[in-house]
Length: 176
Image (cartoon, helix red, strand yellow):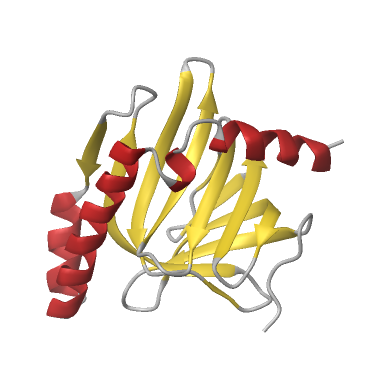
């Protein structure tokens, strides 16, 4: 299977457990694309919601997707520091159309000082019942929330010092 080529522009699609589309990010530049990791950059891109609403992101961002973990991260570059929005979801797949994953509602917001907050637990409970998430999903997500928090504390992966800045510099090379 081919993976997105460095410098190519891809779409990112998130789905819900029931198979319905949740959200589409229109244009992300691939900065690294392998079977294990996709790192992308974008800035003020169009996002389409399942209900038809559209909006633009407000700042440059570096996205990190890992094939072995049930989470992905978006490092948003703001004037007062880097904020992270972490989605708990299935590992990514790539099918020539888009990078895809299933969004499981839970999110972690990380602030520039590396403090964090778990979000949307109520939404997770509602969807867990509505879409009949298997018990195995609960266990997987529980483990991955713990692992994600461990990465934040250890400043590992996309939380490592200079990770977002380094990949943003690379992203700027493709915007010229």
